[in-house]
Length: 113
Image 1 (tube, one colour):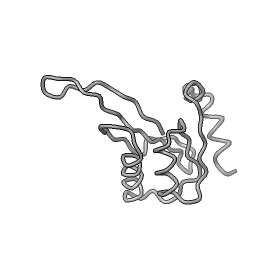
Image 2 (cartoon, helix red, strand yellow):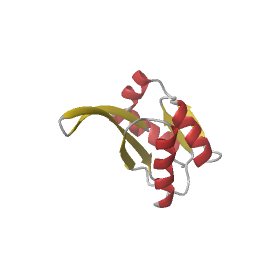
Image 3 (cartoon, one colour):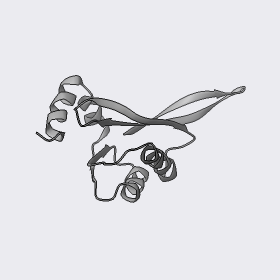
Image 4 (cartoon, rainbow, N blue to C red):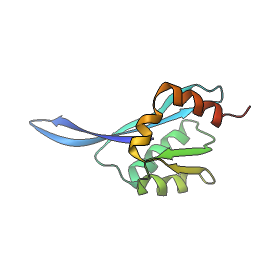
C-alpha cells in the first residue's frame, strides 16, 4: 500500500490530492489492486476508511501489510486488521521491489506451498 500526491484542477485553481492504493496477492498468487481512493490528505482516518471499505466488500484475511511506515497506516491497520504483521520498507527499496522479478520471488515467499 502506498500514497502518491498529485496536483488536481479544482475550478480555476490547482490543489494537492492524494491517491491511496492497496494491492494484494490472491490465494492463487495473482497480484491485483484491491482498492484505491482519492483524498485530500493521507492520514489515519482516510486509511481506516479505505480499510473499512475493503472489509465491507468482502476482504476476509490479511496476513501481512507492507507500507512506507506512515504512522496513519500503522495505527489504522492495527485497529482494522487485528493480528496481521506489518512491515515497513523505505521508499527506495519499495521502488526496487516493484520490478517483476522481485514480485515473482515475493509471491512464492508469501504464499503457502
